[in-house]
Structures are given as structure tokens and as C-alpha cells.
Picture (tube, rainbow, N blue to C red):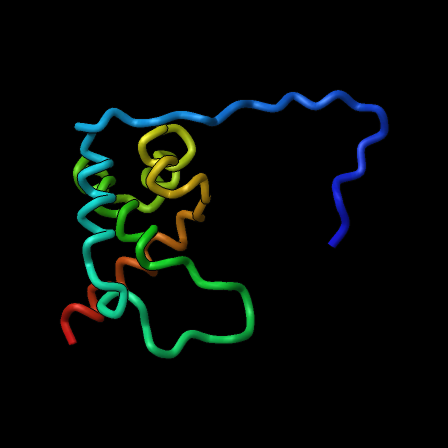
Length: 114
């Protein structure tokens, strides 16, 4: 992989250092999900090849926050990831496609049912 190559262009760097209030619902969701033991959320067999899969802890935080805002559509959740600062804080500035969100929901439901 190569480093970014710029030819004398100026860069406009945005400062994304934002923090949420201590009583924000996103912090409550984050603390709740972090309190769940890792062996419950993580799978034993993860594929070693291909693109790394999305971390289940981050996806669970995203889904719980979206559901708390009554957002259930994958496309609307993707839009929240772009526009909503608490959602970006929960996702650690990762972006996910609208196709990724329903697949995570399906995997979570099938895991809970079995």
C-alpha cells in the first residue's frame, strides 16, 4: 500500500475531537455493551482470509442506538452513521454500507434464537 501522494496541494483537516455528555444515551449503550462478556459476543471461528469482519461490539452499539432513535432501515442507519455525532462516536468513525447492517441483524437474531 502506498502513502497519499499530494503535489503541493493544501489539505483541509477537520478536527473530529468531540465528546458526549456523561448522561447521553450513547454512553449508556456503550457502557452496557462493554459490560457484556466478550466470549458471549465473539464467535469461536472467524475466517482468516478475506476482508476482516465487522466487530460485533461496534455493530451492537450501532444497532441499539439506532433502535433507541426508532430507526430500523439499513439505509437510514447508514445515513445516521454519516450525520449523527453520537452514532459516529459509538462506531469509532467507521462507516458501514447499508447492506452490512441487515446482515448483522440477521446474524445476531439467528445466534440468539439458537
